[in-house]
Length: 242
Image (cartoon, rainbow, N blue to C red; front, side, top):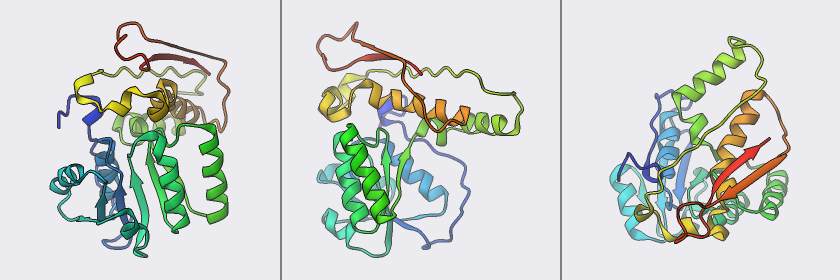
C-alpha cells in the first residue's frame, strides 16, 4: 500500500490498553477501504483482541492477514455474527452498505464500529437509530481525522482545559489527493460513496460539533462543484457553512 496516498493511509496511535487480552474480542468485516487498518490498529492499541477477518474478496483478506496474522479468516459473515465471543464488528465496506451490515451485527447482539461515513441516506440514519434503541447495541463511527490524530486529540484537550478560551469559530479543511488509479470504482459513484458532503464533509461537521461542545447544528449553506475531472462526473469538491 502507498502510505502517502490518503485512501490507503493507515493511522497508528500510542498504545493505551483499557482491557486485558481476550477481554474484548472483535472482528473486521468488509475491508473495502484501508481505514479498516486504522480501525483495527486503534482497537488493538486499546487492548482488544482481533479474532476474525472477513470480506467476499479473498485477496483483500490475504492483504490484511499479512498485516494482522493473529486473526482468523472467517468462512462467511455468519461465522462472525454467530460467535458469542465477538463483542464488536468493525467495518469499512462500501459506504452505502455499511448501515445494513451494522443492522445485522446489532441484531446478532454485537456493537458496530463503522468507518465514516457510517451511512449514506437519512433513511439509513433512522434505521440505525431505531435499531440502537431496540437492541441497546452501539453504532459507533471512526472519524480518524480527530480520534486517531495526536494533534486533533491535543486540540480537544486544550479546549477542555480552557487553555485557548471559548471556541467561537472553527474552520475545517480536508484536501485529498485524487490518485484516481488507486481508488476503486465505487468511489466515483454517488449512490455508493454518498457524495462529497457525506464522505469528506462528515469529518469536518463532526469536528465542529466536538470542538464547540455542540450536540446539534444546522447547515445554512453548502456547495459542490467539479472543476477538473469531467471523466468522473459524480466526483465533487465541497464547501459547507454551519
